[in-house]
Amino acid sequence: MAAKQRYFIELAYDGGNYHGWQSQHNAVSVQEVLNKALSTILREPIEALGCGRTDTGVHAKEFIAHFDCKSMVHPPSSIVNSVRSINSVLPHDIAVKSIIPVHAGAHARFDATLRSYEYHIHFNKDPFKNGYSWLLRDEPDLELMNRAAKIIMGYIDFSCFSKSNTQVKTNNCKIVNAEWVREGDSIIFKISADRFLRNMVRAIVGTLLMVGHKEIEPEAIRDIIESKNRSNAGASVPACGLYLTEVKYPLPYPPEGGTIA
Image (cartoon, rainbow, N blue to C red; front, side, top):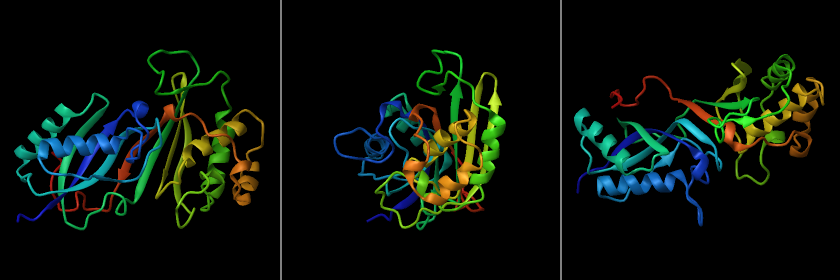
């Protein structure tokens, strides 16, 4: 029997039609749709495991998963053809960018060292941003929100921003960047960390908007984080504006020294 080869697969997706990445009962997920496409084209049962999980309605500009396969061969031309074939059976809102051969122990989730998200907000009604950015009526104070964002970077326990009853061993995360930037009539929150808790980014954005709308002072963020109580933080903002934008791995990458198809 032929030995299986492990691959990393890079994809992007519009999360509007899916109940997140992870397969679940009675709901369509990105993982379920991708597994079906991979199994169809590669003609063997495939189970892709993701670099994390995105919630219902959240988008991904870059998402990494891994899978094992015995039928696909390595030459770049074959991998490129496999990418094209897989994309031909995927729906329009999921696209495979590349497939990379990696060593047998490589893991899309556990090997990732950094993940980055963006949250998009706009202030003028725009039909082309509907479902991809959150329309907000009143502009917040970016300077105040960036002061509060710097305070957040000084902490590691983010229990106050986590969805309750999640099965994780720790609520500690190391945030290396958190900032608001303006682009035209929009503002974007950019955040990078080694890991994220469920609902964490949307809860942080909701809390920072309280600062930006002068409902609380930037320094109040300290009390909220130190309370470790989700009810003290702001409401979670809608999923439509949230994007996973980057996943980083230790160098050298790809783990087997191959090239991206």
